[in-house]
Length: 450
Ligand code: GDP
Ligand code: IMO
Ligand code: MG
Image 1 (cartoon, rainbow, N blue to C red):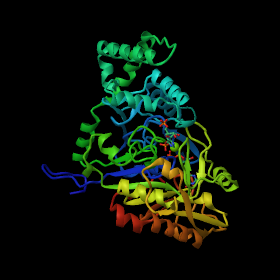
Image 2 (cartoon, rainbow, N blue to C red; image 1 turned 135 degrees about the vertical axis):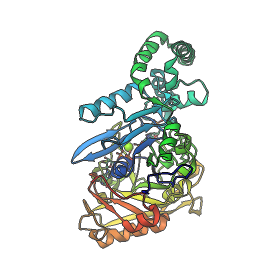
Image 3 (cartoon, rainbow, N blue to C red; image 1 turned 45 degrees about the vertical axis):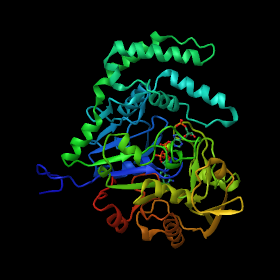
Image 4 (tube, helix red, strand yellow; image 1 turned 45 degrees about the horizontal axis):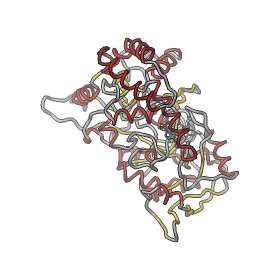
């Protein structure tokens, strides 16, 4: 019997993998998910919305996935958007059309949870307004309406994909919501009818994609199909475990995979944390290792650290092992996928933050309080850099010795081994460490997209 044939009553072995960000987002999740997709039948997004920008390069061709899972470039793979995701129909259709234009057909392989909440035009307005009202304390959001849509969800007045099937109920809900918004926003006279008309028009295209995603995934698992859970944003942007309030409005950490898709914890066979070989952050909030000097600019330039969604320059700094160790704890990481090692090529010296100095004390654990984090100074240890390039390396023993030492030190102080090391943005520019994979991910990761 092959591993995929399940006898009646036999329980399935967990064969699924979660891939999520273990820093402040933009770690390279898109590349890693795309690379590993050939091992899976389904790729599922569980939270966030089109604030995500997951970049995938295939033979030099660039794709940026926002709402659609990064497995979509592989023909035959099914992609699902879970109930934990907030969906802007306009953004979703634009992305589907962009893919179609690039020759990628999503028909019959893209599905959206009927329980996913919708981002409506007034959410985008409220996002901008809320940022303006916060003034100096602004979050630096992507202004996609993400926070306000999740606010409506939690306040139990949100509109879900499945609600589009009931035009009468929908009209009442939209009317209540638009009126509430008009009361909230001074001088606002938003009309109900255009919002409703657009939505009813969009319903014709969205409803055929709607599914009970929990049922779909659990049926698929029972049939022995493999699923990859794709996180958006990163651990330090998580609404609960991130640097609150400078966070996004969803659970980017592993728990979000269960609540955001309707699968049990044992569905998750292993968890891979994607981390950059240094640190970046977009938007406001503390970043202990931030470099505001020439070295910060050097990392930004070599790493092309400009937002995939908003084009904003990313703040850059050295690798923060305190933050990654925290990410390992929160997510129960089995392995790391270490990306952008090549960006450090040619540096004479590379620093690693091993602890924080705060109020005369040394902290080795990531603090809960954002004000305390903001007051922390990073404590660095310095390692020698390397002169010969790592760019494009495909084997661990191809790496210069100093690069191998750097990776080993990151693994040691982060407390998690690196199963994957990325040395460039293309699929092929990757080192798969079969020993770590065998020890930590079992048979989960066998083939790559190369
Ligand atoms: P995501 O949001 O986590 O998917 O990451 P983004 O796509 O926002 O940002 C990562 C950027 O780094 C993208 O432009 C990728 O193409 C690029 N990238 C990924 N891995 C590597 C790598 O190993 N080396 C280099 N130089 N670029 C990489
Ligand atoms: P991916 O999936 C990096 C940041 C924003 C802002 C904060 C809240 O590509 O890693 P929001 O619009 O979500 O309310 O903004 O979160 N942010 C991201 N930063 N990568 C992302 O996604 C992000 N999505 C949101 O910059 O600081
Ligand atoms: Mg991104």
